[in-house]
Image 1 (tube, rainbow, N blue to C red):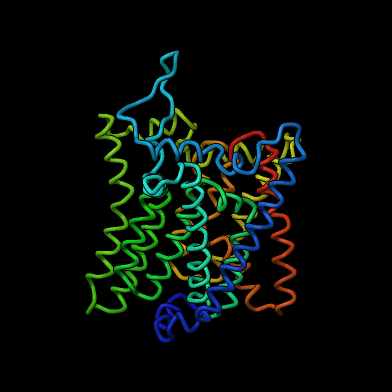
Image 2 (tube, rainbow, N blue to C red):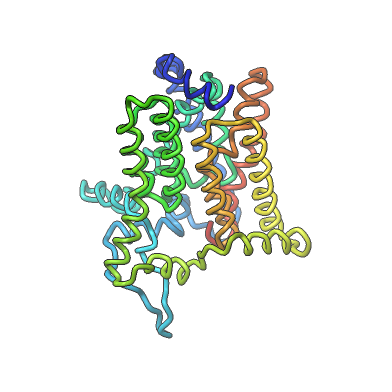
Length: 389
């Protein structure tokens, strides 16, 4: 079915009925719970296999989890410099919505670590529900909704859905935003789009996708111009607003970019560092983790190409392409790129479509094989791999 036909047909059937009501949503949450349980068990087993185990809680709170807890305590008022006088990364690099929620729960009596994990786990449940509704709405099939949940929540870096990272919150918001836009509930789409933009920099890509949905809606119905356009403008304002706030707080308009580059080597180099990483890894490297990351990056590109050939709903396609440009086009830690690709829904659509059409037994076996690798891979990188993800 073409994107135009999908857009026209979308409101014809009540989504809640199409998705299976509470039973359908409960199944989606059950799939999430199954993937999280298996992955946590793998984390425990792998952690105990190393000479100095960190423990489950420490593994779930490491790396960016520590940064988010510090952000929840308050943003600095300017740059941070090391002992040598060199500019360093600081908390201003992290967008505010996730740490704000951590701070809110902390005021209710939870310690920051527990609050961070609680937000992530609750958001993961929201992500499972939103993904099920999105897959059901896009493909007019609840099996597609369940497949999207299972495939996304067992992807190679889905481990961050259980960690003090912002991916679970962003995934819930971006999937919910596209559900609302696909069903033309514009007030919800605008608010969720704004929340996306205040959660991660790639919220800008989500906002662009919403803008495309708004333009499509205006072209289809000239009598209702303002709701979709207002939703798009609200969503598009989020990322520039935060970058401007950082600039005002520090006193330089490009402060956020300088902090990112100083702390994490993150800068947009039009993909030259990614191309160099792929070339060096595929010709010279002998480590299996760099090789696996290279293969994941190439597989994601291939999956996106297959998805585009199938003419998906245009806003999802635009969001996916812009998000992938941001991931592949920036310099930075190569082993973080699979995590950054997790919320790029476009790359999952071919597998979702195939699973929805396949016999149930075939779909279950194929997704189980995918999950066996993905859940182990993420647990390994957290418990055994010594670098950040």
